[in-house]
Image 1: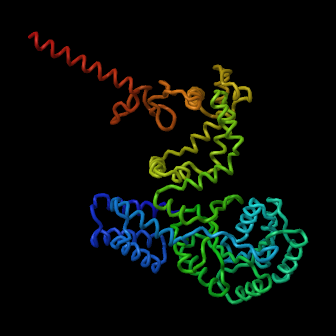
Image 2: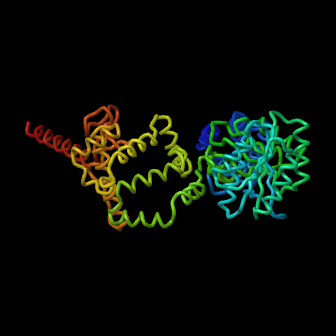
Image 3: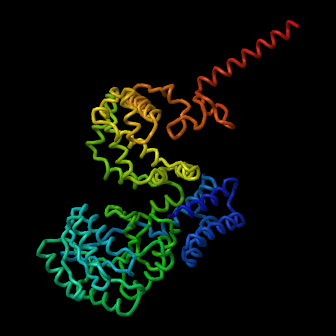
Length: 495
């Protein structure tokens, strides 16, 4: 979502690299580009004005840290202000005060309230809570059915509402039922409208007075930009929201809603929806989002994702297999599948400090690691269990069968098997404490795992002399050239 803004800010910071001191002129020029970048990202213009003025004052004031370069000073100040703009500290749900606690999900129709209700219920259950889902939208066709389907998918209790019931009656009876089932939190999926109107607000105010919710979460579609902020402001004035859930944060919107909504409404963003799966919801961490925007990565989120995907015991067992070189193609396929659960390779690279640029390079070059991974998985899937556990069984006829089943060439199967064996030996050397040298056959390989395309093996590509050759070959070539020069000098002296 923040790719465009991140690219623009990166260019601004580069302009400060040759600057020796910060002064009114170069700060003004840099902040002009920052202002344009934020406005293009659909950030509220009042928010942009306040942000740039604060950054300008800190850049020129006494708050600038001494002992670092001007470019680092600017990045540090912008990072601090971005965190403040996004809400400062992470704001958790506040569910104390009554049992069961009540969360009201509010927002316009189509913003993603129903799906977000199920996602938050799934998140709370992972936190050892007992959620209870209540469909209160009796107006939108199939709204009740949608939440019931999601509740059944999660194997989660829900109240069986019907369209002939009033929302207030549904809420009253549902809370009584939730108490009987010893639920710890009730999530009300309320009705929405295509726009804010008096009837909607009156109904929500009645519900609020009846259930006394601990949280009123406004659900906003991040793709709508400033419209989401305007609607949130209206809900805040008439209902009093306690937090915001931004959906579709994995899309290609410009991110203005996330950057504006806290300043305009005063309500912090508490959750962000990062995909369509019921597990794809994250707590909103302002410092981590600011780090992503500025290209600093987000290692903490990546670690948390990895912890939910790979268990500690499994990781220990995998390390033992690698150390003993018993790591087989079955294990390799399992790890690839777990890696996919973390997200796309480009999104993973952007979370690792310093590798955001590599992600952009892959995108611009058209190289898609996921396609290569899918091809490798197809090859492994075409093997029998015995072949996956013992690649030594793969003779010529077996490799031809695997290639045909996977829709690839025999050469690609051979390359996978060869590289897997080399990787296994390297892992054994590294984990065993030895010095694992890069195997000769792996030198000169392209980033895709194969040799330079459309060329004989070992031949460098045009304009990239020596790119496809090993360091040993280059050394031999240089030695031969020196020897030739010595012979020429001796011949010249004889003459």
